[in-house]
Amino acid sequence: MLEQLLEGGGIPSICSSHPAVLREAFRTGKNSQVLIETTCNQVNQFGGYSGMTPGHFVEYVQKIAAEADFRIEDLLLGGDHLGPHPWQDEPSNSAMQKAAEMARAYVRAGYTKIHLDCSMRLADDPAGALDPRITAQRAARLAKEAEQSGIERDLNRLQYVIGTEVPVPGGAIVREGGVRVTRVSDVAETIEVHHKAFIDAGLEQAWSRVIALVVQPGVEFGDDFVLPYQPDSARELSTFIESRGWVYEAHSTDYQTQKALSEMVRDHFAILKVGPNLTFAYREALFALAQMEVELIPACDRSNIIGVLEDVMVRRPEHWHKYYSGSQAEQSYKRKYSQSDRIRYYWGEPEVQHALGLLMKNLRTVRLPTSLVEQYAPLEKDILQEQSPQWTPDKLISARIAGILNRYWKACAHDKG
Image (cartoon, rainbow, N blue to C red; front, side):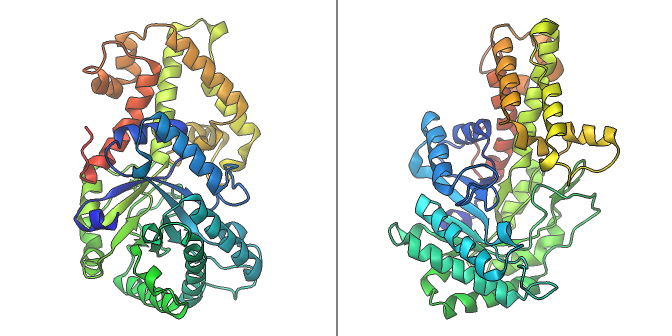
């Protein structure tokens, strides 16, 4: 992967487990490598919030890839923020033991791109920001666990990402007018302390397979705002990394324009992480279909999927209540339309799955009139009109997600059209 990135290309990092997103990633990414990532909170040896261990997730993704007729050899799997974050309320000894077990589980399952993140303070650490040297030593410990677990596989395929200065996962909680771009001096320090920690741990070969550094390039998004990439602000970072033989990994690139993403790849922010924007697109497509259902299906037979989602989210607020503030009306709006897209955690709920099945059944049995497609899904109409004279709900969902993914493929110099 690194050779491709150093030649001026890039790769999207698809941070989603939603089957519709994964299917579309494999469809639009055919004949290219497709990188799918999971976080330590989402997937770990205890199941994470997804309920899947690394081994289970690999089986799940490979099954979807096979159904999409995608070459398994071109599937790359990445572990994001692998470290003690899920157990940061525990003492360092137990938290790091669990993080080490997780690193082993990821590598044994077949993950090959490992982002090491031990930047969080654990229960028995001194107050204040964690010493960068401790962060690096803990990261090296996890790399050693990964290396030992990878002996059974091809170690040359195992590649590392270091660095922890990232935007808030899933988007900012409060509106921001700007974010501070990582300073070159901080990047140099990160490299220095990690290099020393790796060498002290006897990990010279592992250090040679560090391919990227996570920094803050100045991009962010929240409920209703996007901070766009500003090339001038990141110019020093871009120049600095050219001499290292590495690239940068950029988080929270969701909702950036095609032009901004292309500029980021040009400036060596070559690994572009995207997640909420893809499930936001899925939600947009489902809501458009729900509006068509109102016009085409008798009230007694409708799925009422938007109402079902709202009811479930209100009864089970654990995935959104820390993120959506304001009045009850404002929270209700955000539950549906926030770019942070906390609704993505609810598509698998049984009530929602039932409503979704009914919505698709209803609209698969009727003709979707051109006037309704133009009213509620005009972008999909433009994408699909040359492919098929008959629009279906499945094709409209696919087209909406593809519109986002193709922005990334084009930015990364893989024009899938």
